[in-house]
Length: 162
Image (cartoon, helix red, strand yellow):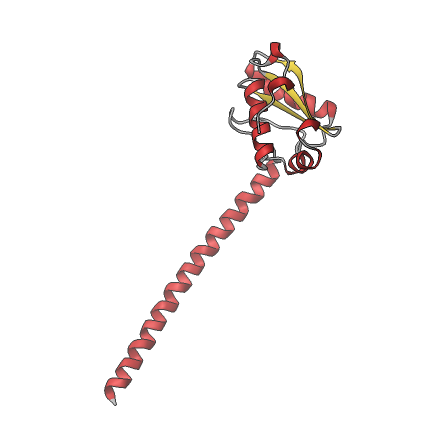
């Protein structure tokens, strides 16, 4: 499927700032530190391949089709230091349905994850718990192997004694 850059006004394609995606009257607010053209390319590519990070948007894209996708430049921003704050303002102002969190700070230009910090903390706790459980199970496995080896040696000795 060919990417449609007609969604972006010509004068804005190489600019950075805050944008809005819309599918069937549901909105997503985002920002780009690269250009609107590059960011919409990522969105379209992910949506068309069925791999978009926003599951609800992905479902609606598949349901309503590519022609239902609308793109709008909300604000051109040249000072990239203010980009995250401006994005948060627009998210809080417009209350878009697709945005998972209403107070989002990007960590770097390639970071497109939109999840609350509490989810990250919970995930880190889960990973640590699983790591500890894995260590425990590895120790138990060593004990069982040693125990089984001892049993095998005992059986061999019993067989030799007969």
